[in-house]
Amino acid sequence: MTKTLVLFDIDGTLLQTLGAGIRGMNAAFGRLHGRPDALDDIAIAGRTDLSIVSDAFAKIGLPSDAARVIALRDAYFDQLGTELARPVDGFFGVLPGVPALLDTLETRDDVAVGLLTGNFVRGAEIKLGHFDLWRRFSFGAFGDDHLDRRDLVPVAVRHATAMGISPGSVIVIGDTPLDIACAHAHGAMALAVATGPYTVAELAHANLVVETLDALPEGWLTDLDAAGRR
Image 1 (tube, rainbow, N blue to C red):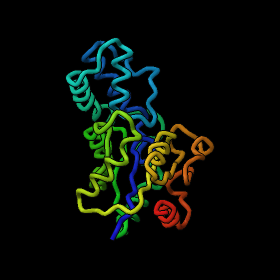
Image 2: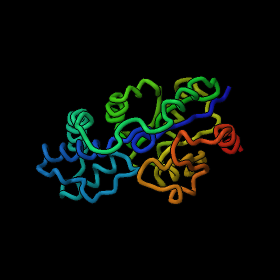
Image 3: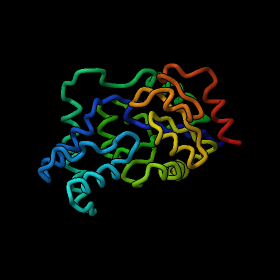
Image 4: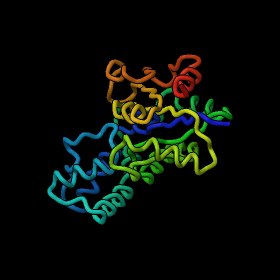
């Protein structure tokens, strides 16, 4: 049996962490390079951590060689848990409809659920683990894998295949235009959700767009799967 791969973004799609990742990464730049403002004015939404870190190094005038990136990444991991535990104002946590949707997809023998995220894999584990969601995903593609998010769909498909999953169609669920572009670059279907920084209108080029994941229409999975197999 072939399976539909349903691949979830994290920030703005599964979780709202109110900038914990940005604060953690800025803190890492501050600790290692004396620049706690390194990410200020750098585009974040929908991009990979690797590309964000590379731009931040360019901003502060340092080359983003492998040793610097690894040291920065590890310092970020050390800080991220602290930032997730820090009290903040506003909605913080698992976004509407996420637990119910994951529960539903887990009952489907014809669906495999994974991640497609710009987060470094360990960063994804820390964020999702904080909300007991990491255990819900058995494979994925992460910000360690490529600089450009558009290259992550084939990575996720390869990981699924290596686990014995035969992919039929692929559905990418995300909250930014870059999530949509990532899906469409490889013939995948894009389901956009307006729980991040973009409105429904700004996400209208997705195959399906909803305000929240608890507003998915009946039959959405069947419809997107059929379209993706044509």
